[in-house]
Image 1 (cartoon, rainbow, N blue to C red):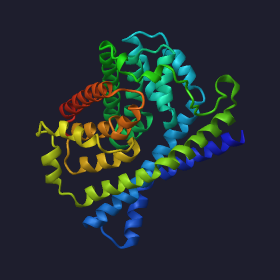
Image 2: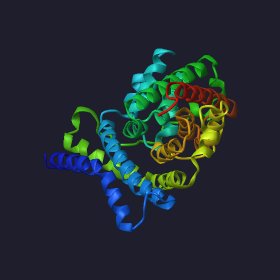
Image 3: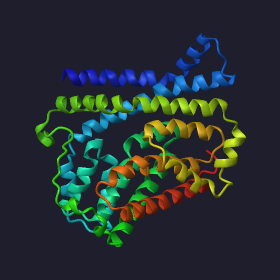
Length: 341
């Protein structure tokens, strides 16, 4: 139980530090001799406050999901989804996508493994859409930054997009647009511990959580720093009227434009959310920046390149089109529900 005691102490220390991040940022800015009234001072304050805030939120969420990972393996996920029909299967798959943390090396083999296990193509797409777009990191950071109402609506709309998009692709019967070798190749990637279920001790589960933090946070921290740096520049230097004019709720075309802008970019929820927060601070509409964020993390060009290994261009085009339409719907709904944040 030694590790459990260390974990409890870490939780207390995390809460104390997180609750005092803003006063610490104020103190550091004061020590530097800069004023938050200046553009550079405002940008610097944003940076030194947001970097530890996002990293701490990410670390906490990744640790918890690392422990969850010891209960949910890719094999168990496939077993749960196998034989499910459209509709109920899509809802279950989208829900599993939120709480099932798989590392990047399992994406393509997992897709293939789902199909080989008898999971319908549309159900598989519901899982693959939900997993990056409505992931636990995005929900936790949205809750920490904007409150439970925004996080809850984001989850509900993201699940709706994943379910409807998966059902649409399933109804179109596009299995013929899978690459021929997909049905033949065997899964060759295994992530996480093989020792899952009741056999694992809680000490082992906590160790897996620590390992998850080391691997994932170690890979994405630079994206976070770069994302916060970009957000700080927007926060300090971009005129408020400029952002409001091109990403405000009044401009109907801003949501489709935000989706198109987000597709070529590559980031994750942790890296893009500081940019979202900075855009909102400059007058951008919540729905517009949500559409931008969701397109970055769910329709990125690198993801399309990876999917090309198993999907033909026709199916990729349908997938991107259906998901983009769903994301635009999310943007318009957010702008209608939250005209001002």
